[in-house]
Amino acid sequence: MTATGHAILGTVIAAKIGNPALALPLALASHVAADAFPHWDEGTNNKKNKKRITIEAVFDVLIGLAISYLLVFILFPQTNLPYVFLMILVAQSLDWITAPYYLFGIKPFKPFYEFQKLFDNRMKAPWGIINQVAILALIVILAKIF
Ligand SMILES: [Zn+2]
Image 1: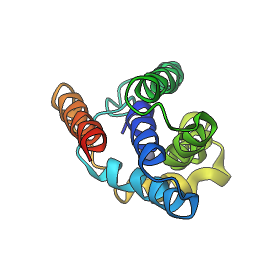
Image 2 (image 1 turned 45 degrees about the vertical axis):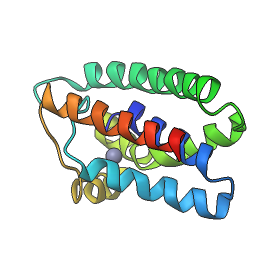
Image 3 (image 1 turned 30 degrees about the vertical axis):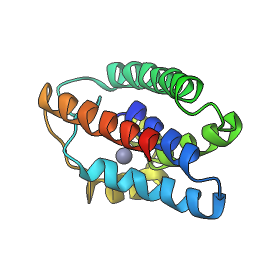
Image 4 (image 1 turned 180 degrees about the horizontal axis):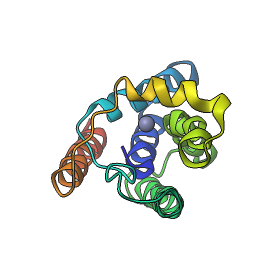
């Protein structure tokens, strides 16, 4: 998924689960579940060069933080911001440790890339984006209601 998608899931987990012993493993598991869901992300179109993917990924991370902040501010104001930030980082963590190999070819990080490939389920734009927005919107709405 996009870094934004992982950030939104991390935010929902932080908002709903105050116990870090439960929230931390769940945030990590959310990465695998989110990537197994058919989705588009910056790397889906493999004709792009790494520089462009890197630039898009930086924007993706920033957009994810901005949307997460808005979600907390508007929907889950009782949630502690540093706690949200921690859950976002954990929800994105597999991508953070894959990026050194994927973007810059740094070999020791290759096992994380190989691991992610096992469950990464890609879908081209626009459906891979529409799909992602729909499932995330649904999860946020359910988190707000229940
Ligand atoms: Zn991933």
